[in-house]
Image (cartoon, rainbow, N blue to C red; front, side, top):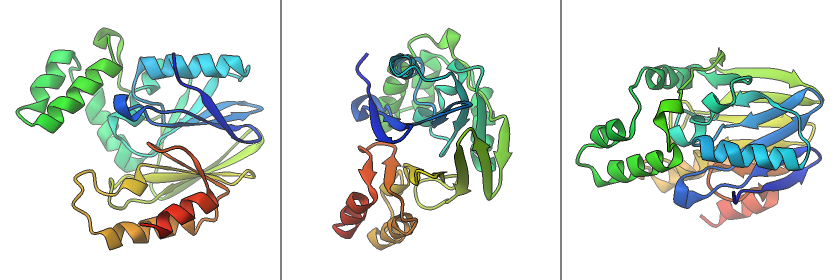
Length: 236
């Protein structure tokens, strides 16, 4: 196990990711009523790392998972936390329902990838993230929303807002107060195909800066303070 929790503020952490293995950074909010995750990671190995890290800080069990979008590396861990309530955008739910009906296996993933080298690499990474597909279960969300949903869990308020944009139409952001931490998933990276205009991505990044968060947690970069993120955006 090689993941660690980065302490952001009070009882809010981020579980470190690994881009080589398509493991995203996961948001971890420890409340008086349970632990809340922002995204559930890419499978059982990352969930085992998470559980080890939570045990080290004596955190309570995971009770809620808030999803930023439907990409497999952000949602495949949900089935390994059966006691948690999954909350997602309606657009994310559409993809989760499709995933729940797929006959997942290593062979299926490679066949589905076809002749595309990029898709084959993705399938290889997927198979590495989920060593035993017999134990895997893709699960739909238990609760969905269209524009925004707000929930209070323990001493923290969570505002899950649909953002949309270049990366995926179902992309959402999660704002946690009173600590003022913003979880933005993969929105900062623009189109997954890379065919967006830089000025269009800049507009989305400026919107994220405009929330005035003290911390911003992305899917595949180290968390940054609001000032650090703004400086990164300014330099693009």
